[in-house]
Length: 464
Image (tube, rainbow, N blue to C red; front, top):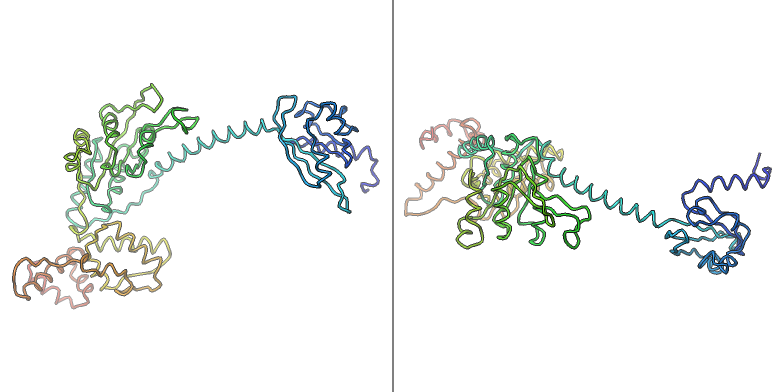
């Protein structure tokens, strides 16, 4: 049975039932503007009844004041779709979109008009905006809470200095004391802060890292303490919690604390003393329970003399001070770190890159002004850019060969060349011997010489 065999009144009913499914109002006319079809949604949106519209011209309805400005005549004339926004008698703001349907000869046969309630869309937009704000809040919390599930840390220690430092970290972690981490850029202050948190009783709560140097001065108070709805121009209609609220029960790590504006230092001191915060635009004080770990590569005592850092805040922060030495003062850690990052990035990128003995020797005596971060970036760069499996000196960046950044023994007095050579060889052997855990065979392999040669030189310089 085909559609031509179905009575026309049944087809009309069939079409009306289909169109009544739509949420949008649908209004169909012929080229003369005579109303042919009106669905139920159109009646609800406009307050007009089908029986008052069907069979009537839109121009007549316009004269009677039923329509303000019908789109049909313009669509028939131009053959192009048209859109308008109107307020109807139901006090709804609606978007009207009319579209032509053509005969095969290109003339307009019908005009199909869709009516959509903008009032509902505006409400949906507000709801979506509120949901976006909520999602952003959860995203920010998740970003700083995700450290809870990261168990792998880039801490490699071989030197006696660092072993002692890690013992101190474990003792401090079991307390709630404020911690001040000191050290050059790249020594791993953020890694140590994370380590302290993970070994503390707060390990199941948030670890919130804040770089004080990256927040604009005009936003820093709202970021730290949050704000109430409408507290200032541009503020979210839902308000926003600050860092201290988000880190409640956990740890907040204030990196680059020396960059904190002087005006904010007093407010931070208040939080350290009272463990209370107040959002911008609020009169309600909130109690927070947060451990503070701060870090800087600056000399805070010098900043105090210059009047840019508060002395009382410094005293509050320096309850437990950890000074992380630069790599040039713990050369025993260099080769283990190189190997650690080689393993890490070879695994990550499915590579099998290794370094030649000459490269290892050069890296051992490079000064590493960027410390651990520089090693990490160097190895990552080599893994992703080099094709060879064994890299040699010529595969390294040229800056590694700069004599200004490579270790040279200090020449402070006039001595025979042989004494300087002996001194250099002694220091070199001592460092490699200690970095290889006292394994003479391993040291011999490193220098590509017989084991007996290494044993004899170690005895000569009284290293063993």
